[in-house]
Each structure stands twice: as C-alpha cells, then as structure tokens.
Length: 299
Image (cartoon, helix red, strand yellow):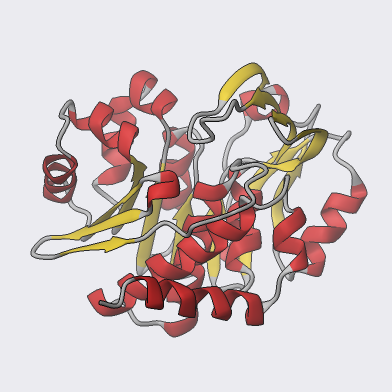
C-alpha cells in the first residue's frame, strides 16, 4: 500500500553541464522526488506524460514500487532544455515545452485519497491546491515551489502555504517570496502563515530548518565529483518526506534526521546525470553517507 503521495512533473530533460550532455533523459520534480522517497517508503505519483514517453522509463518507476495509477498520458511529454556553467547552483533555461502539462488537471485516484503523507513537488500551485482538495485529511503536507510561481501565481501559492506543514524553498526563492535579504525573517514570515517548519535549501552549502522556536543547520556534503545538480532539491524533498512516512515520527528531532537524509540523497543525485546515480546506490551507501554527515557536525 502506498504511503506517500507526490504530485509534480514527469519530464524529458536535455541538460548540458561542463561535464557532459544528455538528451531526453528522465526528469521532472515528481520523478526525482518519488525515486528518492522509494528508498524509505512506497510513493505514488500524480502527473502527466505524452505518448512519446519511453516505456523503459515507466518500467524503471514501476521497478521502484512507485504507484503510477495517477500518471496520465496525453499529447507530448513536458520537455526542459537547460544548461549549467561552473556555478552549478544556477540552472539556465534554453527552452521549455509544456506540451501535455499545459492542460493538465490533477486527479487523485480513489485508492490514493486516504494517503496521510503528501508532497506537493514543484508544479503550478493551482494543481497543488486541487490535489489537497481531493485528499481525505492528510496528516502531513510538504510543499515545494520555484521562482516562476512566486512571480506569476503568488496569491495561489500563499493559499497552498497556509495548508502546508512544511515549506521548502531555496535561499533565492525565500528572499523573493518575502521581499527580504534575511533568511531568518523569511522563515518567520512563512511560519506565521501556518506551516510548522520551513526548510531553506542552500545548494552545496547545506540546508536550514526553522521551527517556531528553534533552528537547525545541516551541512553541505563536500562532493569531489559533481556532474549535474538537476533534481537535487526534488530528491531532497522526496527523501525528507519518505523518511518521515517510514518512521511516522514528526518530532523536531526526527525532522532534523529527515533533513540529513534529504541532503544525503541530494548529494548522491548530483554525482551523475538524470537518475543514473540514484539507480546505482543502495541503503548501505545512504547510511554510510548519513554517518559521514553526523561526523561533519561533531566538535
């Protein structure tokens, strides 16, 4: 039985970095998030692909035990074409083809509506809201977004934030959304809207977890080999909620552990293109790096 519901994009990505290039590779926020979550839980995703979506990609997701009853097929698959220079914290877009995503309407299958853990991965906030409307009293909702939605659908995004338990943002998005240079102020303003916690991702420099009275700073993992950071934030979010669903413990202490597991999966993801690295690792690799994270913070 699936225990985490993830709505987001499933895409075909063309990506170029200083270390190589891939074309029409498996990508999308729901893809990375559900794959990362699958190390800890049994996720199900809500999204849309086109008739051109390779069957081998469907098979890969099925092999991970990811529920696909909510994956629609219509038209052509969403395609993103982007590149990175040596500053790997910033993706630059060459072309975005929405295709089937343009008219996508979230529909949650009946068998998924009772799932208690929900991850609203990066997608139109109207679709995030529609997903929540169809759910039966989820216990824990994590919300991710991006600068485009902050700039174009801020009102709808604020409505979703009010219904979320945890808000995920990167540092630039946090500053943009709350019009401040202070990440502490941005986090406090977000919490005042309703979430119990805010996580601000800082790429290679780690992540910050804010609750009403406390905060936690997770380190960045010192990677020697970085090929492609695409999907790292989505992998972080998927692992974060996947671990919480597995442990069913929403204490502040366990949120900290979930942040570290999110950071572990994100760091592995950056070591290769698409899902290539996540496909190659197992729980022994994840737990080894988790222990390294703990050692980094000891003093």
